[in-house]
Image: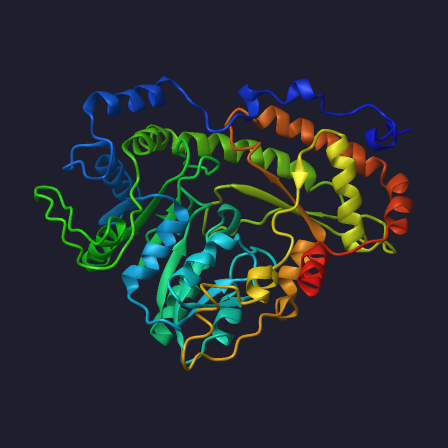
Length: 450
């Protein structure tokens, strides 16, 4: 007889005491980070205007060397990194930019900030990254760029996307916010696009103690444009006196020396942390793969996975419950697994075109969609069936596994999954009786009633 599920009155499989800061705390802060931050105070070089001698300039050099690119500019956050990448490309207002339908909204907001029109394309059902065939089908005479989002830490099919961009004369921009350190065919990501953006948010694989971002490119002109846009359009290169002349209209999106110093210390352990994380995650996923009806993340042989987020898909028919709706199965599994101590959660509850802001075209006073000559836009989630299916039947594990010491806890999570699977017969009636609504129902209902 299987142990009774916690949600039905049984004992919780993974005790709260097992989920300790030493196992799951992120970022891992050591004396190296503390000394690096104190060094900024001692040097008194707090911003990117450090004459090439401070932590910001040091981080830019370190990341350029690490990724194998010529230039790197540190900026305020990942969203700014993507927005300044688009600014550097000089795309005309109203131009279209292809964005995957399944990603965080931070991949699309910078497009609108530059008065560009996001065109959403569906993702591949195996990798969850942008489908090159769907991207090509979405290209119009207005298309100018493709944003390749390395979702969850898995690099996109960069060979296909690079070929597609070259074929149609488009810019390729990597959004590597979740994939720091990942490789595609032996090269680090954030080195393939014409210009590339990453986030240093505190929850990322390469974090800072707050917010930060980096922009990489091999194009000197694009790099100089990013640097100009980073602080009021001023030319603040090392060795020049500040002249307070704004050469372009731009805001203030610098990174602080404290944040840069913290990230430099984290960068020194990025590969070691990733190696430990990879071992722990793979052992966990190997255990889950033995349970019928669970699809674990796939990593093609030509790339590595940063494992920023672990997305698990659930198939009730393969699990022996063919009459249970996939969404209801996912919903009842979420309740059961959380009760056992596994912190699963959804990641994105609606494809990006279903976000209320895009349903209402609520940009900057209605722009960019109101620009003269702009093509009519109507964003429909039904145009992205793969994204809908992935959202419908999946849950994610986030952040808890980033700590390189999390491997033992991940195996305890696997024990909890095994317990739940041994009790699927007791969960089936709950799933069948649910008044189920898909995850995007609430968002779309609020839109209809607004």
